[in-house]
Figure (cartoon, rainbow, N blue to C red):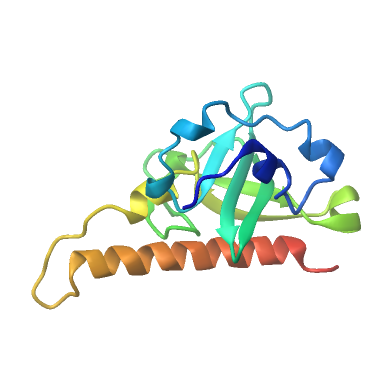
Length: 165
């Protein structure tokens, strides 16, 4: 992922007004983020539990969304699937996230939701080296494909948020 500045991040949000984006929490130290190890940049708001943000490169520029994470009360014995990275994990490591829709629908309270890694760490999961097996492609080929599919799924979710209602 290309490095982002605070100005780029604030200007990227598709599901909040520019004045709201100007007040959102953006972590300091962006210059130290591991950009080359990320497929998207995700973080939480320390002053607002359950509020998260995700920004990724779409085409020539960044696109960002505001998310709300539901409280997790799942059984520890259940396994859930992240809809972005498609990794199976203990239920407490995957959470339902809801995002306000863009425009009038979002201002009226309409949302769309999906299950995502609870701490937005999909980039780490798709970079795990698979075991080398003679009948499988090279591990690096598998990782590249997993990363591409992750971004396709993020892009579809963001497109769903932006779709006119």
